[in-house]
Image (cartoon, rainbow, N blue to C red):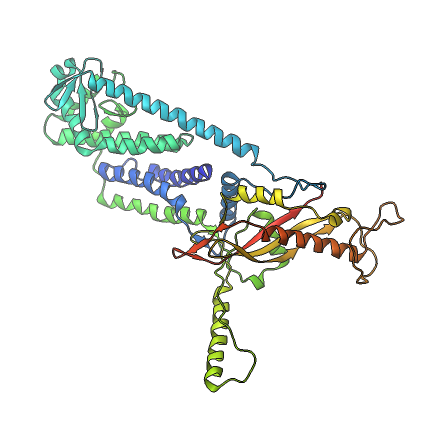
Length: 495
């Protein structure tokens, strides 16, 4: 789940920030550009959790959904018991997904520790200084900086260029640049592997310096030439750190050029409309394919695809409670009207509720999730002796209803795709088969009665397993528990 979200976040951030670099980076709307960068950080983090369903999925939608499932779930395609004929155990998560998750988590921890150490060093500098008016004097710093409500400067800088340097840092404090850095650094910790988030952070620091420079020059505290001379003098000092704003945090060359740049035309702000199609594009990429077909319209191949591509395909719909209809005995005219109304109501409810949706507001859950369900199936499901002898195996789709109280009802076989490794010869005779009959031929074969009896045995075992299920957490619609239908794929594989 974490990796899937991180990748989607990176895709959205990369798309939007790349266009910012092409269209807006060199404009002189510093406050506007700053707002755009913060918006990109925010919207790119939110878009991956926005739930959108599309009825016309593209290859990108399907690919993103498959990748998300591989990264966020523990895929397993088979379940079964551990008796004489044990069924193949559930497949574990792909090794590459586990390794990626471990690398990602280690990276987050390392970047976070580095950030916390930097914060601690700033706190030590602030506490080790002497407060004067609205700033702190500490000779341990080479260059002045601001961090939230604090401004730190050394004694030499205060005496030589104190007025201009303090004006610069007060501009940072006045504009709340530290809050921008805090948000950006949190995103950088979670997106440490994405180079575009670090490029965005660098651009944000540069915009902060452009804003502070413009404010100092426009305030009349100095001339543009004198201020540029001061920047040149401070360019050789060591940058303060990664969590503060300092006078030498951005490229000196870019700041010099920006001071002489002609103000951008207000019409240039319209370039920001690129965020609208990019936001819609990201929404389309992250949209999940919808399953809007009626159950009756699903073919065998489609049902098989549902069972094979999703370990637990929770294809759900609200099950209507059908009102009773009088079928026998004489009816009065009033009763006839009621019966007709009931039949019409039933037909209407069936037409509305036969739509199969991929997701409810809240899905029914077995125990602690899919892993608990797989463990239950592995320990409860037993391979029928007859099916094992006849070498019959395959996938069954079991349809069941999770009631409002979490109990399971109405289990039935929706599809049976079991096949045999042995050839099938002869015609059905209706004979009751309880065991496999050895044939004269060395390879052996099955009679149609043996094959059908084996398939029936698999069906009975799958239904028995479902009937013994403990309580589920029921699904919810509009905040209320509802009866939901679940299609559960059960695989019988001969070891």
